[in-house]
Image 1 (cartoon, rainbow over the protein chains, first blue to last red):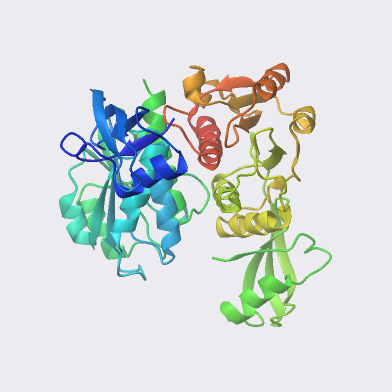
Image 2: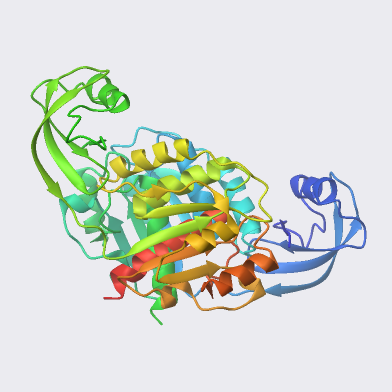
Amino acid sequence: MNLFYQPDIARQPYLTEEDSRHAIKTLRLSVGESISVTDGQGTRFDCVITKADARQCAVRIVEFHSTPRRPFSIRLCLAPTKNIDRIEWLVEKAVEIGVERFSFFFSQHSERRVLKTDRLIKIAVAAMKQSLQSYLPQIDEAVSFSQLLAAIQEEHRFIAHLPELSAPEHLFNLTVPQTSSAILIGPEGDFSGEELKQAVEAGFRMVTLGKNRLRTETAALTACQIINLANISKH
Amino acid sequence: MNLFYQPDIARQPYLTEEDSRHAIKTLRLSVGESISVTDGQGTRFDCVITKADARQCAVRIVEFHSTPRRPFSIRLCLAPTKNIDRIEWLVEKAVEIGVERFSFFFSQHSERRVLKTDRLIKIAVAAMKQSLQSYLPQIDEAVSFSQLLAAIQEEHRFIAHLPELSAPEHLFNLTVPQTSSAILIGPEGDFSGEELKQAVEAGFRMVTLGKNRLRTETAALTACQIINLANISKH
């Protein structure tokens, strides 16, 4: 099954240029064939192709159905890695397994000072379609660490810190199902003492993700897996 | 902290060429400095550098301590993906979070018919060192599906199958802590009916990893996370 993405399908009943090419050139779909299109906001549209144009494939909406949001949400907060490929695969993988939001920050210890989110959004769209989901996770522009802390609204706030420095509780045990969670992931080079202090003051609780020392992007994906799994298994 | 790898450190008290370069050229370590070396079989050696040679850094073993294996084991069984990068990152990530063994097979539906394991082993070594572990996971040469099934010794056997085709139990609920588990991951293009039949006959139980359709490598990493987490949280 193939799922396409058109955020404004209701008012613009045709596929994006990229999806049009994929539908007509790659999949060789033709007039009269049925496809599914999501608006990335929870509604999936069953459509029929009315014009098999590889630049702008027109469709007619047959019916649509909305799916509710998950009863919990995950906001991953991390600093961009020096090697951007690592962030790109994190976005792909986290979207596949389920995440609501990515919030990037520049840490005192992070080398990278620029993050382009347009390519990350493309990757998130592809992962949403590939995993047959109807919601496109939000990807925030990178901000300073204090700006990030000020913006956090989630009920439960966790900070994953290098295990050797302390022995906090495991994130799995502290995850409260059916609530909103934000998790701060230590950057390459870890948080500064000042950042740790700020986070704790902002209500973030120290957690461990396990015994092994994990790379930033591995820690972020693991945290996402843990919160997803705690929600599945705890009720 | 840096961890080095020398499988035969007891009889060959010097670092590999790659680790020697890293220790002397990159980290600028010199004679008299302490380093840790693992043999990849559970023993970590505290050493002192006796010859700071970037091609062959000699060390003296000061003391060593062995760590027991985990009380459970995970064997990931999957078909190589068309794009080998996806297998390479899976190996890096699974080793970071904890896995005992990778077993690759060629499925009726898998396009790739060749898999070089030497590069995967290099990646596993790097991930073991990076995550400060003392055991190097085993990486088997790819074999046919029936050869793989015949070789499985693990107590608990699971097969992750596309959720839409059935509604099996979640792997988390079926994982038995402190036991050995093998999990078969569906290849790109999924298992053939014949392969599914063979797996079930070989004692593999159908499981789901969640609602979303996951890529092969994402499913493999997710299965690994689930079994690790079930072992942490269920006792």
